[in-house]
Length: 488
Image (cartoon, rainbow, N blue to C red; front, side):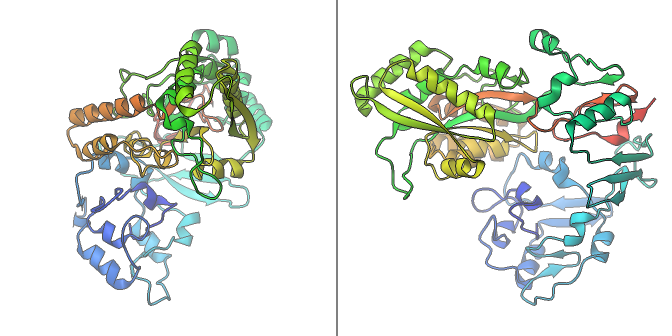
């Protein structure tokens, strides 16, 4: 926590959106997530003395939180809770030369550790043998002193793992076919070089077409696709635009009703996306398939809504209004979606004329971050199976997606805080469902789908030679747990 790194590991241990934060004393110490003023030794000593983390005995550590936080155990079970050797870290750490910078042995307040960015000494079943920074290649060796896990039963069968960076997709595929590699990343763009397309699209079955190669899946993943609508569109100078169509729920429902999400999931994502009712996937705690959408694909309903809204907002067939929808030129899938929406609404002849324009990635991101656009399409990935960060992002006014859409429902914010602190899983799940339903009823977003494990846009590791045994799926871990694998 002393690192206080807003783009590093510290950002995955949120201190809450307001005082008192999560870790005891962290809100007062943190400059990134709290009200800390400096990284002086006095600030460090005060934080450490507060007892957020205590060593009880050689096998027990105690965390003292500033408030109940239901997702804490889930957070600790991901890579954010990985354990490294303190002796190793301290041996390669240098005491800060700046007298204004506080520290404890091994950690300098507010400062990353350059040595640990490229070196590792953990407590897992494998140790880092070599890492070639020029090529990105890594060699792992089985750790002979590994403790074996809670039941002391985990003993690596594979003694050496070579991770080779091969950027060319065709080369990876050839290496996999020839058997010169045991595991390969095959991107979704080339998925049908590996599995039978018709079997997948018609039967939803992953069937390998390469002899000696198996492809596990599909499995629920932690990526979703969605569109968001901005309640307060701004001009480039920061002032509010004169025309605010999405402030009217009828317009939001109409746009949602003009999106054929079934078609999008099949033709944009090749079927590697499942329908969802909210910004969660079946891999996450609290997922509730019974949460209802406030819309469905229905162009007649969209027309009725826009005709009614147009009378109050000042547009109609005899008084047309132009609207520009933007998308990222580097993401053709976004272009497909917004073009579909524009075509569907334009054909309704209700006086709302939509045009589509591609922008560079930077221009596109700046447009929706600055709220210059009213309708935008996105994907989002969670690093944990706990939905807390997404509940905040979509449902609270300070949340990332809600903030860039000016979505603010005080009832949703109150439900978020209540579930944040609810330690009873059943109570918390019920609160999450209430929050989801409330946001759905406000129609701030259109939920397009949740990616399956064989459907990540650029990354999927689940392609392996059939001789590799022991694979199991973990949605919060992007790769293979080598200690469970064996080769026959």
